[in-house]
Length: 113
Image (cartoon, rainbow, N blue to C red; front, side, top):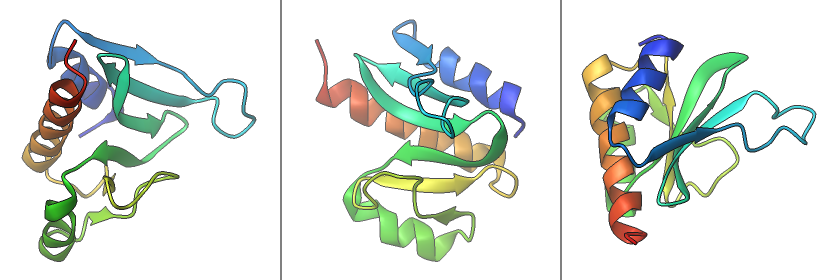
């Protein structure tokens, strides 16, 4: 999936999805685009290097997903207990959509207003 298709998919998950560039104050993270629901992040990636997408995941599913898919690894700069990194270039589109939707639902349910 390319960067624009992924962005559009994230925004299509609900009217409550917001996109932000939250790290513009940091020299090497200014191009990180993050997606939020209820004010909390559920996915982000670097627009300048669309290599790894960091996605929230249920802790009990992470090891199974890593064993099953070579495109899943450590998240960028977040706890590997709650987040995964997905290789945007090698991940099947349907898997990326499934994991992203699940991430959105995890965060939305946890921080439901």
